[in-house]
Structures are given as structure tokens and as C-alpha cells.
Length: 122
Image (cartoon, rainbow, N blue to C red; front, side, top):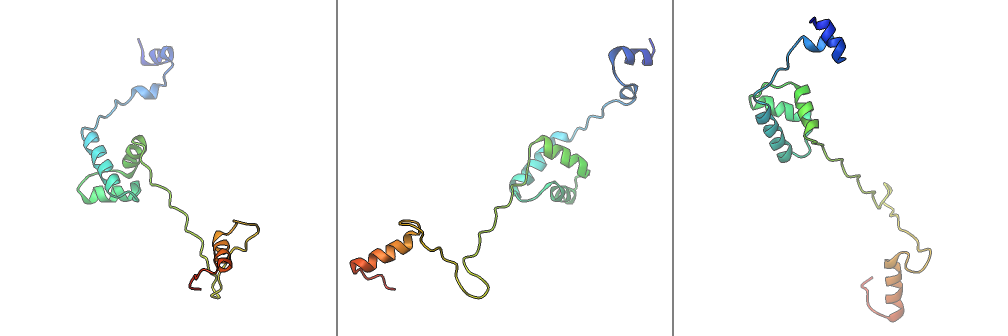
């Protein structure tokens, strides 16, 4: 039976029959090394991990590291947003004005302390 006929019957493309799959023996060791580096350096992505692997004498391609990175479900956590400053550049301070009771509790506390005559140190 010819290759052309067999591929047509199976519904496969003929180019899939040209090369055999290359099994890499160090795949498990490389995966373990990538996971160990990702756990140690949590903010590093696959590009920097690739550079570190090359520095540790691994002969790796960046695409291969990225493939293993995605297969293992590794991700760099998103950065937390920076908190807004309470002050402006001119030295003034932004404070909320109370719109209703218990809206800005610190003002209510100061107001209550002044009414009761307690010493707040202000």
C-alpha cells in the first residue's frame, strides 16, 4: 500500500509521516529546573529563567522553555496597583469632607471628643 493512499484513508496529511518524533531525555530534569527557578524567583518570567538556565550550563531554546512554562501553568503574578497619594505636589492634603454621619469616622470621632470635653491632643 502506498503512503499516499494510506494517508488519504486515515485522513492524515502526508507531511506528518516524514519525520519521527524526537524524544528528549532531559525533559523531566529541565522541567524540574524551570519549576525550581520559578519558585525561587517568583517575579521572573520565562525569558529571564532561560538566561539563568543558560548560565547554569543548560543548552536550551527560549521557545522550549516557554512551551514547558505554559505546559506547567507557570505565570508571573500581576503587579499590585500603587496606592494613590494623599497629598498633592503643592503640599496640600486631600481629605474627604463628611457627607453624612459615619461617612468619615475620624471627623466624627474628633467632633465627638470635642463635645464630650475629652482631650485629644489636637
